[in-house]
Amino acid sequence: MNPGFPRDAVLDEDAWSDEDHCRTAGMWYALSKTLAEREALAHAEKTGLDVVTVCPPLVLGPLLQRVANTSSLVLINLLKGDRDTVEDKARNAVDVRDLADAFVLAYETPEASGRYICGAYRKKLSEMAGIVESFCPDLARPVKFVEGEDDRMMSSKK
Image 1 (cartoon, rainbow, N blue to C red):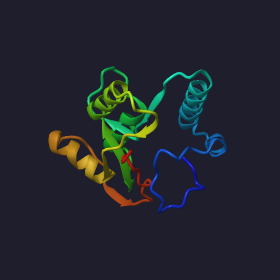
Image 2: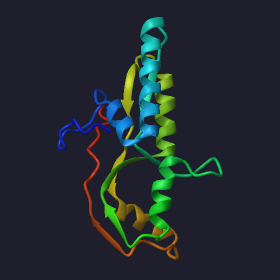
Image 3: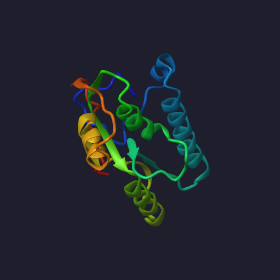
């Protein structure tokens, strides 16, 4: 969440959300995650604690809880079909099971340090809706997808 990054820049572990932008835009979830991660890494630096952060984009897959989380709400709101049009932008995403594997890998790898982006794929919202619809053909969907500004590309190379 940083408008200062060039639109064509690939975001990696050096990219951070802009705290002032998050405050101004009311992006409280993004702001709280950014502040918490910065504080954890600063505490680690100060105390010598070994801290590794894994930063996922949109997390999709089976839920463990009965209440939908922020990522799942993106897909749920898309599939509710209560809008005539939906901005069809590409989103970076990861399956929750792959994310769990990434957490275990970070924990079990002594050399792991700092931040890790964990994004596995990039899909348009229309593609995501199509995948769900293939399993649940009776679900309502928006009438029309319109072009939208894609999320920035992310790199999980590290």
